Image (cartoon, rainbow, N blue to C red; front, side, top):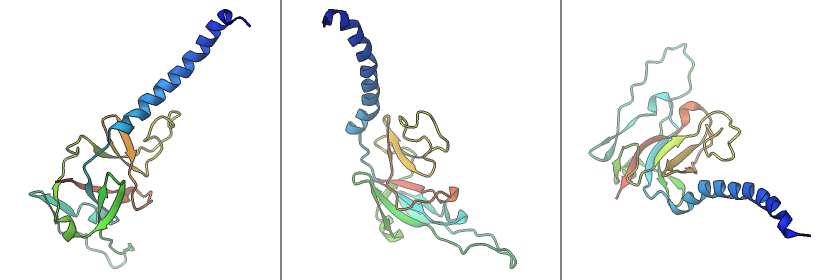
Length: 175
């Protein structure tokens, strides 16, 4: 077997393999070196009227009064549900339920982007042929922390697909 004759064949087969490896490395390697460092507080679980019941004043979380509509006697509805507060530790990728008093001990920044350049996003509804290469495709029931060309799914304490039950971001914990 003459290897000089097979060089074009070897190169022709090697180029697509190298391209696949390059694309995979460019997608997955940044996630190994860039990690979010700022944890955050969010609420979850309430009904439509309790979704935005928390506010930030002077860096501290406060409870807003809920303005529930008056219920008609013949109107069927579920009992009112209050939101629960959670602290999300981005280092451990874990959330823990906390009380309002515990949350008030933290100084919070309600900005969309964290001080280290990340933000909380929801997955998108739909399907893409490139779903294997994208983190968000078809994951409309999930939330992600994204930034610096990195996207990681949040490990949340619930698995609920109803549109009104996504996490309600409150603020980044500033140390």
